[in-house]
Image 1 (cartoon, rainbow, N blue to C red):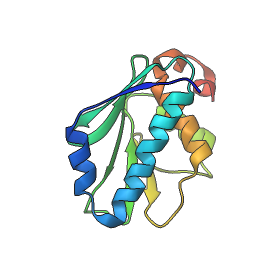
Image 2 (cartoon, helix red, strand yellow):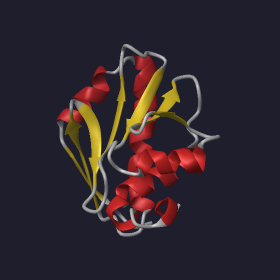
Image 3 (cartoon, rainbow, N blue to C red):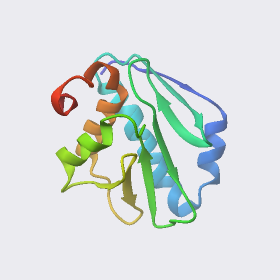
Image 4 (spheres, rainbow, N blue to C red):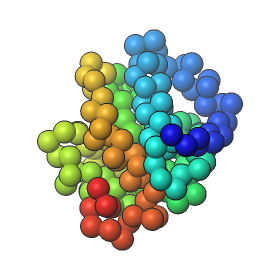
Amino acid sequence: MKKTEVKTDPKVKSVFKNYPDSVRKKMTDLRELIIETAGETEGITGLEETLKWGEPSYLTKKGSTIRIDWKSKSPNQYAMYFQCTSRLVSTFRTVYKNTLDFEGKRAIIFQINEALPKEALKNCIAAALTYHKVKHLPLLGM
């Protein structure tokens, strides 16, 4: 597997540290899945981990930003957010309507007490991280 360079803003660590214990592992698993997928995806040599709107965010040169977060007003779920003006979530909904849960045009929602559907999620992450290369393809090449 090729090495993808991950540049992390030190402030991201404090966001993860401030999640409740019950949520931190789930958020860390999501983060690791994004980094792992970036490393396995053709054409991605760098991944930037930063904060946008106070949420851990992941950017690549040819991709669309992915944000992840847990909010205390919905304590039993956490989410992966995408740019709502992109075709990402509508495409994910078409491909994975029986596998993933969605919120509008902007997010995939996960339940705290359920395992991540990793294979489906990795396909979604790869599509987002390469969005500007695949946006012209039917179903984003998924």
